Amino acid sequence: MEGMRRMLSYVRRCVDDYEMIHPQDKIAVGLSGGKDSLALLVTLSELRRFYPHPFSLCAITVDMGFSGGTDYHLVQELCDRLEVPFYIQTSQIAQVIFDVRKEHNPCSLCAKMRRGLLNRTATQLGYSKVALGHHFDDVVETFMLNLFQEGRLGTFSPVTYLSRTNVTVIRPMLYAPEKAISYFVRKNQLPVVKSTCPADGKTKREEMKLLLRQLERENKGLKHRIFHAMQKAGLDGLCMTKLKQKHDNDLK
Image (cartoon, rainbow, N blue to C red; front, side, top):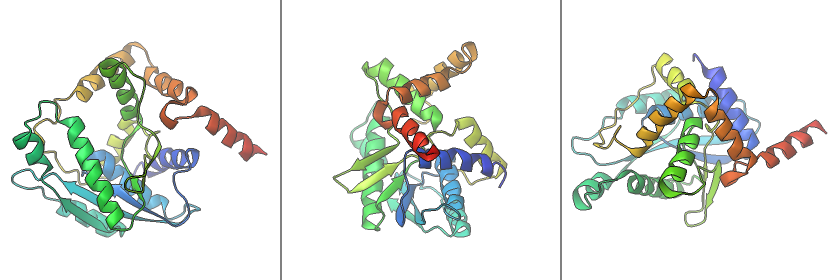
Protein backbone atom coordinates (compact mmCIF):
# COMPACT_ATOMS: atom_id res chain seq x y z
CA MET A 1 0.00 0.00 0.00
CA GLU A 2 1.24 3.48 -0.86
CA GLY A 3 2.30 5.42 2.22
CA MET A 4 2.35 2.32 4.45
CA ARG A 5 6.00 2.75 5.41
CA ARG A 6 5.31 6.26 6.70
CA MET A 7 2.20 5.18 8.63
CA LEU A 8 4.09 2.26 10.15
CA SER A 9 6.85 4.64 11.22
CA TYR A 10 4.40 6.89 13.10
CA VAL A 11 2.52 4.01 14.70
CA ARG A 12 5.52 1.83 15.57
CA ARG A 13 7.32 4.73 17.25
CA CYS A 14 4.25 5.68 19.28
CA VAL A 15 3.52 2.08 20.27
CA ASP A 16 7.13 1.61 21.39
CA ASP A 17 7.43 4.95 23.20
CA TYR A 18 4.35 4.32 25.32
CA GLU A 19 4.64 0.52 25.54
CA MET A 20 1.13 0.06 24.16
CA ILE A 21 1.36 -3.55 23.00
CA HIS A 22 2.48 -6.56 25.02
CA PRO A 23 2.85 -10.23 24.04
CA GLN A 24 -0.45 -12.00 23.25
CA ASP A 25 -2.53 -8.82 23.54
CA LYS A 26 -6.01 -9.00 22.06
CA ILE A 27 -6.76 -5.58 20.59
CA ALA A 28 -10.15 -4.35 19.37
CA VAL A 29 -9.98 -1.45 16.92
CA GLY A 30 -12.84 1.01 17.31
CA LEU A 31 -13.90 1.24 13.68
CA SER A 32 -16.26 4.11 12.96
CA GLY A 33 -15.71 3.81 9.21
CA GLY A 34 -14.05 7.24 9.10
CA LYS A 35 -10.61 7.78 7.60
CA ASP A 36 -8.74 7.73 10.93
CA SER A 37 -10.06 4.41 12.21
CA LEU A 38 -9.63 2.77 8.79
CA ALA A 39 -6.01 3.92 8.61
CA LEU A 40 -5.42 2.62 12.15
CA LEU A 41 -6.93 -0.77 11.35
CA VAL A 42 -4.89 -1.26 8.17
CA THR A 43 -1.65 -0.11 9.81
CA LEU A 44 -2.06 -2.30 12.90
CA SER A 45 -2.92 -5.23 10.65
CA GLU A 46 0.39 -4.73 8.84
CA LEU A 47 2.29 -4.15 12.09
CA ARG A 48 1.20 -7.48 13.56
CA ARG A 49 3.06 -9.28 10.77
CA PHE A 50 6.48 -8.36 12.17
CA TYR A 51 6.06 -6.72 15.60
CA PRO A 52 8.22 -8.53 18.21
CA HIS A 53 5.22 -8.95 20.54
CA PRO A 54 2.57 -11.16 18.87
CA PHE A 55 -0.94 -9.72 19.11
CA SER A 56 -4.36 -10.35 17.61
CA LEU A 57 -6.90 -7.91 16.22
CA CYS A 58 -10.61 -7.47 15.71
CA ALA A 59 -12.64 -4.48 14.55
CA ILE A 60 -15.81 -3.26 16.28
CA THR A 61 -18.24 -0.75 14.83
CA VAL A 62 -20.84 0.86 17.07
CA ASP A 63 -23.79 1.59 14.80
CA MET A 64 -25.47 4.78 15.98
CA GLY A 65 -28.93 3.76 14.80
CA PHE A 66 -29.66 6.63 12.41
CA SER A 67 -32.80 6.18 10.33
CA GLY A 68 -32.09 4.59 6.98
CA GLY A 69 -29.20 2.57 8.38
CA THR A 70 -25.53 2.59 7.37
CA ASP A 71 -23.96 0.32 4.77
CA TYR A 72 -20.80 -1.35 6.07
CA HIS A 73 -20.37 -4.02 3.38
CA LEU A 74 -17.19 -2.43 1.94
CA VAL A 75 -15.72 -2.24 5.45
CA GLN A 76 -16.59 -5.92 5.90
CA GLU A 77 -14.79 -6.74 2.65
CA LEU A 78 -11.71 -4.84 3.81
CA CYS A 79 -11.68 -6.72 7.13
CA ASP A 80 -12.04 -10.02 5.27
CA ARG A 81 -9.00 -9.17 3.11
CA LEU A 82 -7.02 -8.24 6.23
CA GLU A 83 -8.24 -11.40 8.00
CA VAL A 84 -9.56 -9.33 10.89
CA PRO A 85 -12.88 -10.34 12.53
CA PHE A 86 -15.46 -7.57 12.17
CA TYR A 87 -18.34 -7.00 14.59
CA ILE A 88 -21.18 -4.48 14.36
CA GLN A 89 -22.79 -3.50 17.66
CA THR A 90 -26.19 -1.92 17.09
CA SER A 91 -27.47 0.85 19.34
CA GLN A 92 -30.09 3.57 19.70
CA ILE A 93 -27.59 6.30 20.57
CA ALA A 94 -28.84 8.60 17.79
CA GLN A 95 -32.43 8.43 19.04
CA VAL A 96 -31.40 9.04 22.65
CA ILE A 97 -29.30 12.10 21.80
CA PHE A 98 -31.34 13.76 19.07
CA ASP A 99 -34.93 12.62 19.68
CA VAL A 100 -35.21 11.98 23.42
CA ARG A 101 -32.73 14.44 24.94
CA LYS A 102 -32.64 16.83 21.96
CA GLU A 103 -29.03 17.79 22.74
CA HIS A 104 -27.86 21.10 21.30
CA ASN A 105 -24.20 20.14 21.83
CA PRO A 106 -24.35 16.38 21.26
CA CYS A 107 -20.71 15.48 20.58
CA SER A 108 -19.45 14.98 24.14
CA LEU A 109 -22.37 12.78 25.24
CA CYS A 110 -22.30 10.87 21.96
CA ALA A 111 -18.59 10.11 22.33
CA LYS A 112 -19.08 8.89 25.91
CA MET A 113 -21.97 6.63 24.94
CA ARG A 114 -20.15 5.20 21.92
CA ARG A 115 -16.94 4.56 23.86
CA GLY A 116 -18.85 2.95 26.71
CA LEU A 117 -20.63 0.55 24.36
CA LEU A 118 -17.41 -0.11 22.43
CA ASN A 119 -15.50 -0.98 25.60
CA ARG A 120 -18.28 -3.26 26.91
CA THR A 121 -18.49 -5.05 23.57
CA ALA A 122 -14.72 -5.55 23.47
CA THR A 123 -14.82 -7.06 26.96
CA GLN A 124 -17.67 -9.39 26.02
CA LEU A 125 -15.71 -10.58 22.99
CA GLY A 126 -12.62 -11.27 25.12
CA TYR A 127 -10.49 -8.29 24.02
CA SER A 128 -8.69 -6.45 26.81
CA LYS A 129 -7.39 -3.50 24.77
CA VAL A 130 -9.25 -1.00 22.58
CA ALA A 131 -7.34 1.01 19.97
CA LEU A 132 -8.75 4.39 18.96
CA GLY A 133 -7.84 6.46 15.90
CA HIS A 134 -7.01 9.80 17.51
CA HIS A 135 -4.05 11.42 15.77
CA PHE A 136 -1.50 14.22 16.27
CA ASP A 137 -3.90 17.01 15.25
CA ASP A 138 -6.62 15.64 17.56
CA VAL A 139 -4.24 15.89 20.53
CA VAL A 140 -3.43 19.54 19.84
CA GLU A 141 -7.05 20.47 19.07
CA THR A 142 -8.26 18.81 22.28
CA PHE A 143 -5.64 20.67 24.32
CA MET A 144 -6.74 23.98 22.82
CA LEU A 145 -10.45 23.19 23.24
CA ASN A 146 -9.94 22.37 26.91
CA LEU A 147 -7.97 25.57 27.39
CA PHE A 148 -10.44 27.81 25.55
CA GLN A 149 -13.71 26.20 26.64
CA GLU A 150 -12.98 24.94 30.16
CA GLY A 151 -9.91 26.86 31.29
CA ARG A 152 -7.93 23.71 32.03
CA LEU A 153 -4.88 21.90 30.67
CA GLY A 154 -5.65 18.46 29.31
CA THR A 155 -5.75 16.23 26.25
CA PHE A 156 -5.93 12.55 25.22
CA SER A 157 -3.75 10.07 27.10
CA PRO A 158 -1.70 7.62 25.01
CA VAL A 159 -2.68 4.76 27.33
CA THR A 160 -5.64 4.71 29.73
CA TYR A 161 -6.72 1.82 31.95
CA LEU A 162 -10.47 1.70 32.66
CA SER A 163 -11.07 -0.30 35.84
CA ARG A 164 -14.85 -0.44 35.41
CA THR A 165 -14.62 -2.48 32.20
CA ASN A 166 -11.08 -3.84 32.72
CA VAL A 167 -10.12 -2.39 29.33
CA THR A 168 -6.95 -0.52 28.40
CA VAL A 169 -7.47 2.16 25.75
CA ILE A 170 -4.50 2.84 23.46
CA ARG A 171 -4.05 5.55 20.83
CA PRO A 172 -1.30 4.36 18.46
CA MET A 173 -1.63 7.22 15.94
CA LEU A 174 -0.80 10.13 18.24
CA TYR A 175 2.33 10.89 16.20
CA ALA A 176 0.56 10.72 12.82
CA PRO A 177 -0.53 14.08 11.31
CA GLU A 178 -4.02 14.20 9.85
CA LYS A 179 -2.55 15.20 6.48
CA ALA A 180 -0.54 11.97 6.27
CA ILE A 181 -3.59 9.90 7.24
CA SER A 182 -5.77 11.58 4.61
CA TYR A 183 -3.13 10.93 1.95
CA PHE A 184 -2.82 7.27 2.96
CA VAL A 185 -6.58 6.68 2.89
CA ARG A 186 -7.09 8.52 -0.40
CA LYS A 187 -4.20 6.88 -2.25
CA ASN A 188 -5.26 3.40 -1.17
CA GLN A 189 -8.98 4.04 -1.72
CA LEU A 190 -9.97 2.79 1.70
CA PRO A 191 -13.77 2.50 2.04
CA VAL A 192 -14.65 5.55 4.12
CA VAL A 193 -18.23 5.45 5.42
CA LYS A 194 -19.84 8.87 5.10
CA SER A 195 -21.15 10.20 8.39
CA THR A 196 -24.91 10.72 8.56
CA CYS A 197 -24.75 12.63 11.85
CA PRO A 198 -26.58 15.98 11.58
CA ALA A 199 -23.91 17.61 13.78
CA ASP A 200 -21.06 16.55 11.49
CA GLY A 201 -18.88 19.52 10.50
CA LYS A 202 -20.77 21.91 12.81
CA THR A 203 -18.87 21.38 16.04
CA LYS A 204 -16.55 23.35 18.31
CA ARG A 205 -13.80 20.95 17.26
CA GLU A 206 -14.25 21.95 13.63
CA GLU A 207 -14.04 25.61 14.64
CA MET A 208 -10.81 24.91 16.54
CA LYS A 209 -9.40 23.02 13.57
CA LEU A 210 -9.94 26.09 11.38
CA LEU A 211 -8.43 28.42 14.00
CA LEU A 212 -5.33 26.25 14.35
CA ARG A 213 -4.98 26.08 10.58
CA GLN A 214 -4.88 29.88 10.49
CA LEU A 215 -2.44 30.09 13.42
CA GLU A 216 -0.20 27.49 11.80
CA ARG A 217 -0.03 29.53 8.61
CA GLU A 218 1.07 32.56 10.61
CA ASN A 219 3.36 30.61 12.98
CA LYS A 220 4.86 27.67 11.12
CA GLY A 221 5.50 24.70 13.40
CA LEU A 222 3.10 25.92 16.10
CA LYS A 223 1.26 22.60 16.46
CA HIS A 224 4.50 20.68 16.90
CA ARG A 225 5.65 23.15 19.55
CA ILE A 226 2.36 22.74 21.42
CA PHE A 227 2.67 18.95 21.24
CA HIS A 228 6.27 18.96 22.47
CA ALA A 229 5.34 21.35 25.30
CA MET A 230 2.71 18.82 26.44
CA GLN A 231 5.32 16.05 26.31
CA LYS A 232 7.83 18.08 28.32
CA ALA A 233 5.16 18.82 30.93
CA GLY A 234 4.11 15.16 31.06
CA LEU A 235 0.51 16.21 30.45
CA ASP A 236 -1.96 13.31 30.67
CA GLY A 237 0.68 10.64 30.19
CA LEU A 238 2.55 12.40 27.36
CA CYS A 239 5.70 12.17 29.46
CA MET A 240 8.95 13.27 27.83
CA THR A 241 10.95 12.16 30.90
CA LYS A 242 9.78 8.58 30.46
CA LEU A 243 10.73 8.65 26.77
CA LYS A 244 14.18 10.07 27.57
CA GLN A 245 14.78 7.38 30.20
CA LYS A 246 13.72 4.72 27.71
CA HIS A 247 16.09 6.14 25.11
CA ASP A 248 18.96 6.27 27.61
CA ASN A 249 18.33 2.64 28.62
CA ASP A 250 18.32 1.57 24.98
CA LEU A 251 21.78 3.12 24.55
CA LYS A 252 23.26 1.21 27.51
